[in-house]
Length: 354
Image (tube, rainbow, N blue to C red; front, side, top):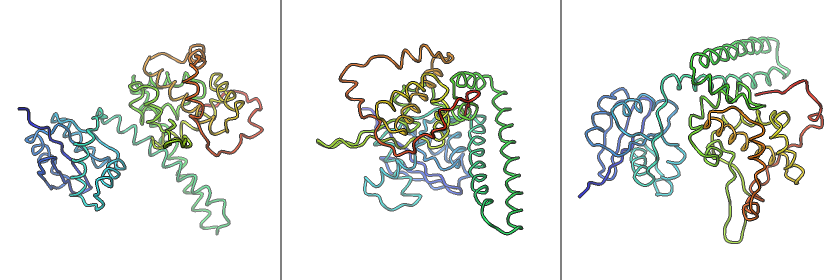
């Protein structure tokens, strides 16, 4: 008779770690620094899967130690676990309850373990996120500097803006150095930037925050980014399809790159114009092009071949059967968005990449 697999839920905070085993109910509460005890305790119980929430980086050392010990670890989205707890009627929230919920989540859902990022990949992701934070701070300070403030406050804002500019430039230099030091990242960046409209910012964001690129199919990668439309139907009611979820940081950069690509990438430009002529609102057409761009980049990463406009155009123009065409008719429904500026049709000296 085979024994039933067990699942471990590990709730990690800054100072403490709580562990629960399902379905047996064993528990452990230790300090966050006592990772050797955590590993020994879990190795002895041989769980089929260890489920950990992403907690802003506090989980990294524990996950690395557990993976090094040969345990399967799944780092899951806290929102999914919280929704699971509500569905199970667990409305209270403590570290001990969270560990129980994580173990029950692993037993019921059995999330798939993902490959662990190495230290260099973590450093690249941290740097990309830090650059984004600096840009957000600069935008806020720039807005404040345009207000009517006292001379002393205005001088402080200007000093802070100058410092932020220098930090952003330093982050860009560090990113350049890290990409150049890795042959694999350098090759990925060259492949991504072969697509018109894709510049260094999008390429490095994908390298840092989309390690799944090239390993999933087009639908999966679109959903992971957050540009896949989801149904909202019930009975005879056919609701509005909309995109949601995904990785907002990646989606924001992809959006900016698509604004450039629909003007200078011949394939995406034709697709955008076709959707607009078919009566689609501007943002619907733009989100559709965002999806096409990320699916194209996923295929490029998978095939390890540079962008081919002829092949991309042939694939995009592949005829669909009438049922498939009807099913896709309302796949990109309304997104209220401002119409494009009338000046956008003017010829520019060259393509702009993001």
